[in-house]
Length: 635
Ligand code: BF8
Ligand code: SF4
Image (cartoon, rainbow, N blue to C red; front, side, top):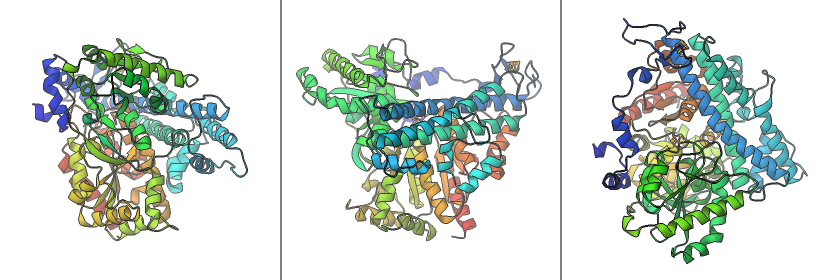
């Protein structure tokens, strides 16, 4: 069983230690949960009202309608779009925090923050048609924040959110407009999904799904603004060499793991940690404070500051089982509630920080933008105290880590390409796509899931596509998987890239003075940073005068798990990208919804879902799509 759990060697090393300590992990709980409910897996269980729960018999003979009369298609569609709404809400809450922080900074509040990247502020302002000439930086920032806040406030249904217009081609924007799926207000769209799926409302499955698509596009809007404004506040990523996997935990340091998604607190922890190094040394940790990242908070600080990544979603518990994490500080999303119990088996202080995200058994230190610095100091203090309680005999840090060159946002990719063609940086990339040196572009994104062997699908698909000369971008836990597997190195390019891809990555790398190729997989950041990949792809499409659906471009979330992933995959389809998921979506109880997602969306949007749990077969199907797109483009 063990080798079916994860390909991550650090996980394999720690599982017996978990067992010895009688700690149940996500994999143990998965096993206990078997067999999982068939009705739920098919999307056929409805709990939307208290006449229920109702379930539809997928084989016939049993109930074919819920008590209210909703059939399988209505039930499946409603369940699905409620997931999209939750995903959109999660990303957009994150975005709202960031825009409110920027607004505060622009009015001289929140001393822990400032405008770190003025150049980005100006480029964002231009995108939003905000005047920048001879204007005070903070005034521009204020206008950017206020215009962004309109995306949460606008009540005019005819006017789309501002940000979505910046990431799709004009042609596609009009297509989405004609289909009435452009969001006008993120909050209103999420609210509408909850309303239309209440008992006795929208029962026409295609209409329900299109309502969900609007929510998914609101999710995209929320992600773009979160990424772009975070860059203004915290800096735009640029290439940096760091490392990944649990070997980044140091025996002789106070180890603080930051886990979750929202960069507002983790940024301040990173910038203040240096101040308290002396205290850590006094407490007996000669290496001072060691900040390490998990999940997307980890990805955020990794691509911006080179903070090492301890691990990705599915193995967050394993970080605690090393016995050497002194504090795990969590904010929002994808945090396993089990961590407080596991932390309690050791000396680890598990600290929740957001008032709307508490965990029983954890210490809560309430975060607010006003007092971010003090909160960070208090947390660092708690970690140092916990370090004093650490039991050296229980420390088991796997000596496993990989080098990772990360930090490839659009700006840094364009800057790298500019070394080849200063005037027209996208040209070398386009030329190489046209001449076939690069066959296509793939975005590896999304979660880990206990339904798959952890990280295996990412590794298989990445190596397979790279061998076929596909340029690889990655984000979220997919990027974490690739980093841990050593795919973000020059060596990986040498070893796994097809000859022509290798040549292109080498010429760019050499032009940048790296003395070798760019890494095989380019780490773009957290899941909200999927917007970076869209920005890059749209820039290419605009330059070629085509739509995203015409490009040899695919996305893959082979181990998708969260509601956010459902939202992301749906907007990816809606903006025209063929999108692979390796987890069977909970929709197969409805032929109408299944056909709509895998076929109908192709006519409507150009994008569609490819469902294939086997990673090698998935890679084959994705290559077929890329070849087909090339053929249609005549290249
Ligand atoms: O936002 S990939 S498991 S950590 S949901 Fe969560 Fe999924 Fe990881 Fe990043 Ni995204
Ligand atoms: Fe059952 Fe209808 Fe209520 Fe759903 S909404 S639980 S199908 S009665």
